Image (cartoon, rainbow, N blue to C red; front, side, top):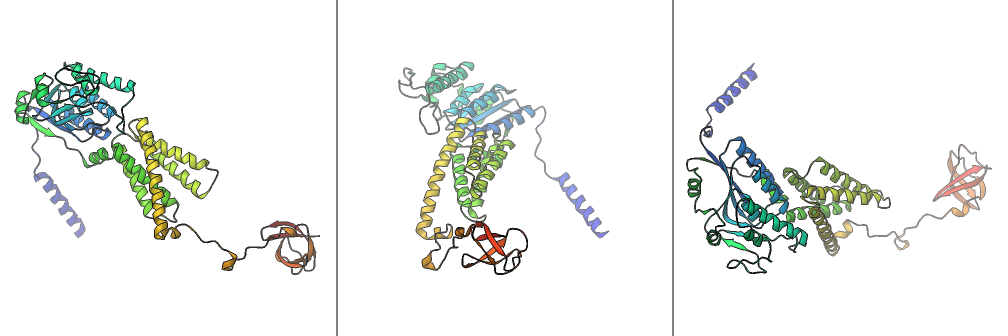
Length: 437
């Protein structure tokens, strides 16, 4: 009874706290609302997933406008095109406010918006497409990207030649950029050629220009999971995690038990796949392929079978990484680079272990030799088909005298009496099998 009373009091207490707790002020259904969504850091799949959630919340709240606060050095082209689709499909106007840089894929996103505004001292452009190593891309892809830049500029009524010059060094515009250079506009230059819809120092000025001076402002922050996903889905970080995971996995297989290397490998792969799942790049099938790949590699390590299982495991592991990447090409590059770096780490680690003397704790380096008093088993194959006599009863093992020497034998079937004539019918190492004559 006492326990029930205490429980009832606690329930009423917490209920009262929830009733009288200070609630955040609710936005009136009649009040206009503008959502400010920051685009900072690299443009990648994690950013697209975050923007997808933010746009959905803004639409559900009936916002009058979305403002993308852009300050990015660029990033993945595929993520940028997906963000463009989000902007085109929004139910309300989407404005870009460049504070302080919209470079590469960031310029593409800014040009996709319904209007482009800039803060003093900002810049936009430098959108030449490159691969992960920084090398120039093939002509076909470069031409496609240039047309994409033209397309988003044309859709919003901007000078498409200026947008194309941001992506191609072959385009020269007098007074702006010479041939062989990539165009990047400062705020003043963009304002001078009417490439921006306005320059505003503060948000208050921008809200007033948009007719939203009295609107409630909602900023949508990144959740901790989204922040982690954005970090992990960056190609450099993804490559690092796979490298550490592979190197630690190989070291764990080569050592007995489950130790630090196994934990490091598990943590690295968990972060990689967890981040890609949050970013919407990986599903259960990817985790299944990865687990199957690890199991096959472990089986190959302990039960050699001509490398079939090992190769199957590597193929499954590679498929899981490739399917987690935003593109097949990117996934293959991440896997190839990770395997190479993991090999370097493993080689350096083993060399260091050899120098420090810890290698002998992992790999058996001692041989049992005659100098150390070790004598191997005698070769008894010369007794095959020889005859002799059972010295003891064989039940079924015992001793027989064969070819003048006493030998430990075992009968082929049942009991053999003492002094029975026997014949050696099989020799397997030190096991000599006899049958009565």
